[in-house]
Length: 160
Image 1 (tube, rainbow, N blue to C red):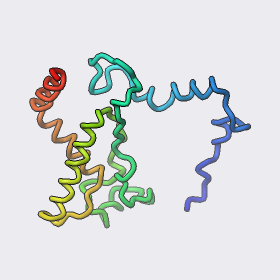
Image 2: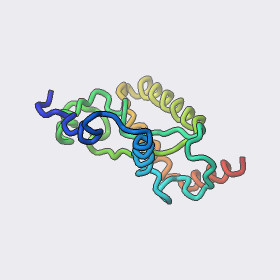
Image 3: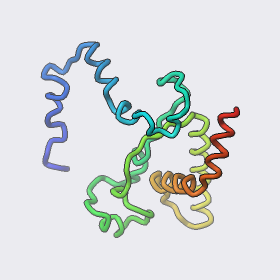
């Protein structure tokens, strides 16, 4: 357990009394992480017309979070530590967190594909420790390698 207090300075950020007015809360939500991510021209659908920024049809997929760590307690300070006992393709420290927006159906299909890939890696290749970071990195590399396929998918989705 680290000796430093990870909550140090939190009271200054929130306010000494720990309460915010409703207007402050709304302003905080509007200037939070989503504004950082939703910069014009940076998303995959930047040229698509926006109907409603907060619809239920958008799901946020954050790479490099959650189960992607798979036991990494943050104690590893270098990639060499990870290579000692970590059989994954690359260390967690080599990743960058990026948020992408996908429709729920697409996310469901990707999660189904992840389950199938995990099962095939286990049964056919004896790989039992697929991490989220490995799966998503491979999925994005595959997409980047097949730009013609990406174009076809985008055009097909616009025709729907």
